[in-house]
Length: 265
Image (cartoon, rainbow, N blue to C red; front, side):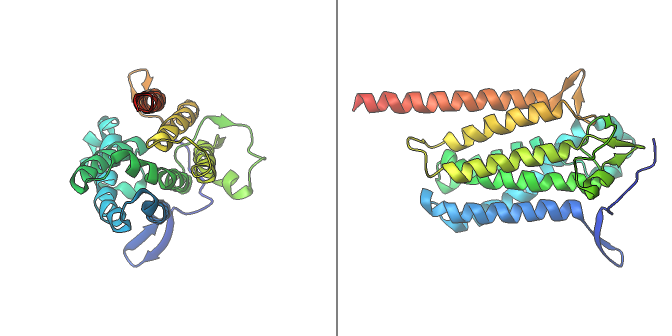
């Protein structure tokens, strides 16, 4: 493997033996913004802002564990030879889908005990999840991961991104940037339209997220060279298709059921 030409150190701050990495800062900052957005929106859905805080205190560590377990599971041969590396999450290796699955499971359990409609809770969470994912991808940038095939040049990008994407003696397709931008556009769309569009039902926002993120991730994942694989299948692409189909079904069922009950009245 060629040498990595780091333009920016992955370590943001070092205090004696302690290191604070950009990867962690990106994730934590994204979570803070997500919680703030959810707490602002919660009263509209008659959900207590304190419930958002209670939820994130449980969901954040569970999601980190889920993201790591997912990554390790599908790259087990690497970690079987060096089990201690399983716990070294600051080097990267947190799979977004693992975090989403663990977080969603936590949300449904939490909603049950708090007697909150899960779809209302998910609708509140979507904008924050999108912006957190957009910010989290920059952690991949600092760690020089989540990139695509070698290209001749990246002259269309700012120099600091171009330098950071010089990996293994070649410029690499900045797939982290594509996904971050896609999530940011989705965030802007949700924030701009969710209170303006008439006829939105509970669950429509999360359905939009499933379709939007699923499409973007499917396309961008196909550009990456470091995908987790299950035989010939890119796992994230397969899950992306599941999200898209699930989102479409949710919209169709949601509105069909609503129309059915309206016609009954």
